[in-house]
Amino acid sequence: MTVSISNIKASQSGAVLSGQVARAVAEARIAAGYSIDDLSLTTGLVHEEILGVEEGLNADPAKLKRIAVALKLPPSALLVA
Image (cartoon, rainbow, N blue to C red; front, side, top):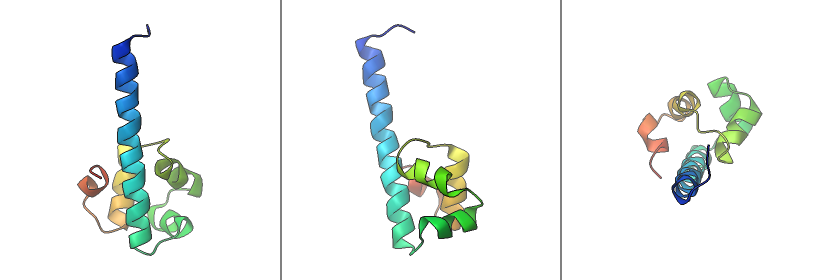
């Protein structure tokens, strides 16, 4: 892959989107009164996976869906912050 202005812009917009998703997940978890460990037990994801989502390192749609179901939210709620 070559480095170009368009590649940099695309990667930056992905980082912003990932940050918005991370913030939405953390806010929804806190609003529901869940700790990361509580959410881990409910979703079947390990603590580090949830932490990765909340830090914007992993926005895997399958994980987001499991988190949304556990928090009794439509999956789309975590995709739009």
